[in-house]
Amino acid sequence: MEYISSEISPLISVESRLRDLTPAKMYAEVWINPSVRNLIRIFNHLRTVYRILYNYLPRQVVAALPEPGVNRFKWDTGTLMFTDLAGFTPLMEKNARHGVEGAEALHAMLNSYFSEMIQIISKSTGNLLEFTGDAMLVQFPADAREQDTLQAIRTGLRMQRAMAKFAKFEILGEEFSIGMRIGLHVGKFLSADVGTPHRMEHILLGQSVLEAKHAESKGKTSFVCLTPQASERAKEQFRLTPVDDGFHLVDDDLSEKELGDYDILMPTERMASMVLFDNSREGLISSIQEAIDKVEPLASFIPRPVLNLLVENASARGLPPDFPEATILFINLLGLPDKLEEVEGADLEALVNGFSRLISVINAEIETHGGVMKKVTYHHAGPDIMAFFGTPSAHTNDSQRAIRAAREIRLIVNQSEPIKIGEQEYKIESHIGLNRGQVFAAEIGDRQGRREFNVLGNAVNTAARLMDFAKVNQIILSESVFEDLRGDAPANKLENVQLKGRSQKLTLYELADEEEKK
Image (cartoon, rainbow, N blue to C red; front, side, top):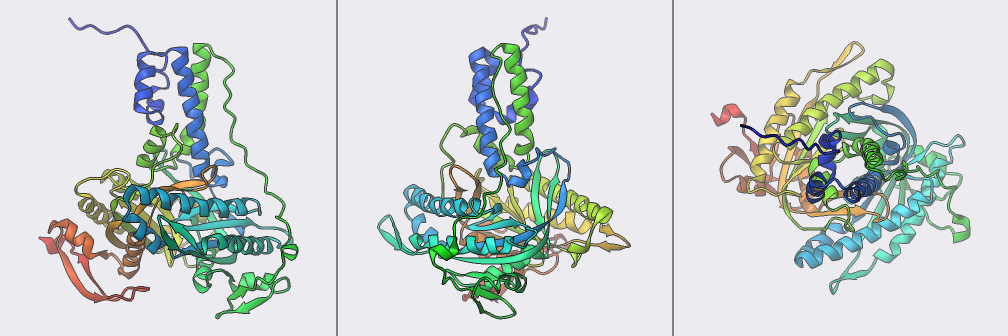
């Protein structure tokens, strides 16, 4: 005879939603013993997770609680700021030799930098849209009197002045120096939430994003560089030095008094309140249900392995930094309209929905093979997707997993339906690059505010350059990836390759097609 327990947990109504948001030990304890004390622990834990996720996401995502699986999108305007660090790679490589001690020291220094910059940005009407490695993309919302560009310039000057403390510093007995380049552009860009209830992604698309990054690359450390459009707005208020192609550097010849006080603070988006009013078992179950309703939509924007880390470490002071070996995969998607800014109405909806479907299946393929889709960003000639294999969960065959994912993603893109806009169809094409090496994996940003789990270092930068080198439908491998494959994937050798921005010539490999393998 089969015996079935008649005892049913009071959590049964929320169990399927609770399991991914609760540490394994806490989940087991409350399921076995759903006492009032344990239910209060669950509620307090969910409140902590909500605060963490709130700080992991851009303010425009959390301002209106997102609905998982719904593609929200809009054209936004203002002045965009793109910042990038110079000197971080040698800093990372030298500290990697010290293992855990070096990771912790580097982490403290990097977060000191980010905290300083993020606080200046937040006090100057700026909105941090995304981290890209050690870079930041910031928006200064459009102002009717076109003051947003002037606010952005003043913010950039304050940030460069604050960099004085990083011009010379010591870590573990060694002296280092880092600098920062800042680029500004004024224009229109597309902000969209795309994906599925399992995984959403906030993306920014448009030429204005590229122009801000272009201004940063044209600039110099310790300066703020303006595109021609931003220069036009600033020429009466600041002294500008021409660079070329209409770009200008802002001369910081202002006194503290002339620079002025911080601009009017932006309204701070308030976190949804989570207050426990009823300590009865029924009241606690209801409060836990309401807490899940607030946490779940934000959790869908976090890669699953990273979410698991955040959930398990919610009571800790942050995620521990590390120097793992990882295989980095970069995918460039080309084929969107050149004049994206002119797409409106139903055509814009069709574009966002088509792109959302493509991102969703690409993410699914990356997750299937044990990787993490970290970021979709707009760079060079279209959206880039970065994924990594080897952190926070490592496998003995991470490169093989990355290669299998890359093959499937190329097939997915090739077989994807063209995106129809008006009478014209746009076929998306892929360029893919993979590299393997040591990375710095850490929770970076402001410890008390905006932050993200990220991977940084030369291995990441090289993977991006391999993607740039790849032709349409090509998958380009570094020598380190090829060697790690141990012959599992046939590839064609490419010798004496000169990558942009690299002085040393490299040996690379083009992954052979399935037909060639046969």
